[in-house]
Image 1 (cartoon, helix red, strand yellow):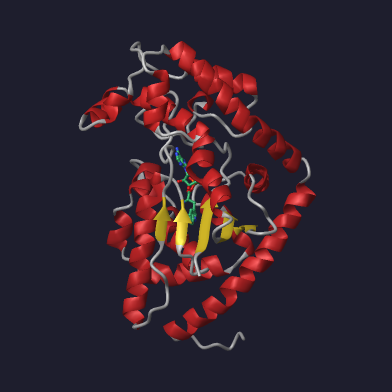
Image 2: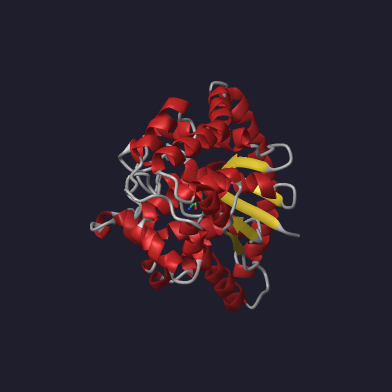
Length: 342
Ligand code: TYM
């Protein structure tokens, strides 16, 4: 059976990258897979979170999934801390994964910055918990943005090493699903930086809850260059890499438009060849508002009704535990733990 697991951290400011890189793809995959979507609050606390803000963001991420079209009856939506299997399996994986593997994780290096000695142990072991999230369900496919590719390679390594060390064919080797034109949405202020929840400048990202005026202002002020837009010829041969290097902000906006309208980058370039940014930005604003407006409004309606969201999360957690408990029992047997707990 093909099963999807994916997650989002409740660390505030869900943005267009989270939507186009992940959540929108989940909505499209829900018809073909058995899907489990998680608000990863255990991951969130690898850097300090204000407790009240964490509670709010946990509900808001669940609301975003529902507002974007993930059906909570057909799929499981829950928060990570409500299923102890994640933390339990993560401990086993702490003992399977090697320090050298984790030392290579670029996200840890970026997040820990220069002061590695002061980073939490949780931040270092973060990818092991992520592997546990996925493998506790024996998920086979993981739809994410490009920035998670390395973590999924580690998940594959952990599954392989566990299977090898214990001489079993137990954990599946997961396939990343990194799909569409917006797998790595960049900051609106700096085309070399990823659009991120934690960027101190709100002008760098379009939040899923931004009103039309804010979206218009952010796109109007987005960094561009003085050249007119190129035509589809730039996608041929080395020209594409040259364009991405020379005009990263322009390419980012073109990719955003392609993704929002479900067109290929080539079709978008053909549509806007020779146009000025002022015109293109207006059209981009209109499509961004048309897509995000209804989702943002529904997110606000849902977060104003925390009882409903909590109900969805509670039901989801119960179903999540039903899947992982028997899998973890098998893991305990494989590892050699006594099963006196039942
Ligand atoms: P997080 O919360 O940073 O992001 C959630 C999802 O959004 C994608 N994403 C982006 N996609 C395109 N452009 C961007 N600028 C951008 N920023 C974020 C991410 O790739 C992700 O798919 N470690 C994960 C959460 C996680 C997880 C998991 C994911 C925990 N356990 C198990 C999959 C499976 C994270 O921090 O995502």
